[in-house]
Length: 174
Image (tube, rainbow, N blue to C red; front, side, top):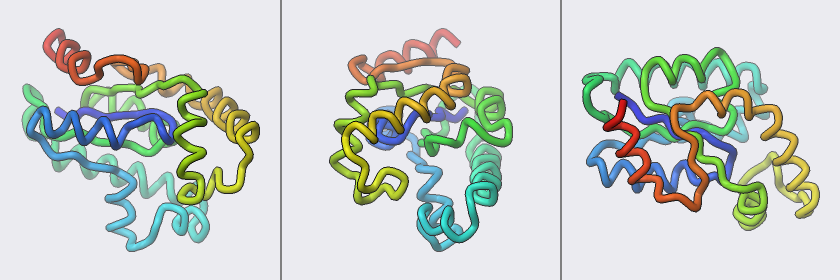
């Protein structure tokens, strides 16, 4: 089984995913990093050169390839996968992830996202150069578009909770 971490950029998917993977003794996979390796281009360049529609097709294909590769034993966790913020919103990816693994929505408060993202704006083309107010409006708007997908996750976590304990407890109850 795979554990899929979902949520907005800056929600802690990579940070928490690495901790969860170490704790469980399984590989950690960042879907965006894997796409970058396969395409030999950054996500920013893929968006710029190929457009979002083509990128989302690549993303869906990569997601399905990892499910095939890592869904070896459904009775135990085989890997932790950090998905891009938009991954659940296209090509029925959310339903696919729910069918093939355990989904976790990392859902910190908007104020926390703004605080985290304003520190690394230069590395995120979608938000580079935004003022704090613009950033908050952008996050609020994007979250409103995505919440119907994110909310389908098996487990919802705000970042003030002890996520490893919650995930283990939920996995044992499944």
